[in-house]
Image 1: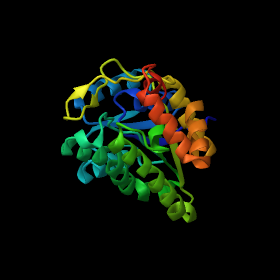
Image 2: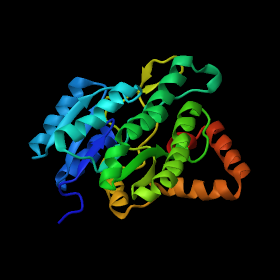
Image 3: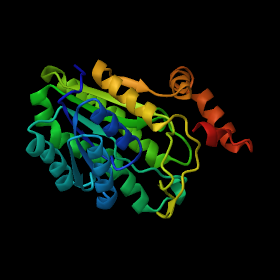
Length: 270
């Protein structure tokens, strides 16, 4: 019997990208899934796609940046399927721009979605996860391992997930709940994906993919099944994490050189 057979999972930000790929893999392996996102129309389209695979799926539109919507997401899993075993905090907003140029609303939105949103949904889901001795997973980024220029708000939000996960692991250890964090590289994106520019406008991503969505989804499920604490997806991320611990100054100089060069090094690897 597959580990995920019959389990109930809640995935935020699951109308596309890594969230939808993870939901697809869970359905394939016999789990029942609750998916959430802000866009109701796209979310319903994703639910229909998963249902055609034979999955039992509930779609809950809403914004993880608000407590009311986050509570409704967790409640939908329990009311619809009677339990909750897995929470994947995947909802996130990306941005580009130096802090001196960022509109205040960009800072607020990134932190509200990426960090506060993960805290809200997790807080709402905790009683059910404790009851099932389940899993809570946070989807972070290489940008959560060390700071990158032009991504201050994003790095702050993703780095904050590390502290959140480590605190939760200690708080939840007596209850048997597994807490883990995944540091993704720049993942293959859908053509319509947009990120926030300095002024809050939406622009296309400017980074090449480090790995496909399907690989990210498979790796996330392997981490959950093995109850691992941490997963760093890319060789660049693993190397950078070790190097930053050994010599932060060296890594920072390398990042500044890459950004200032005209060879596109920073865009390829950040």
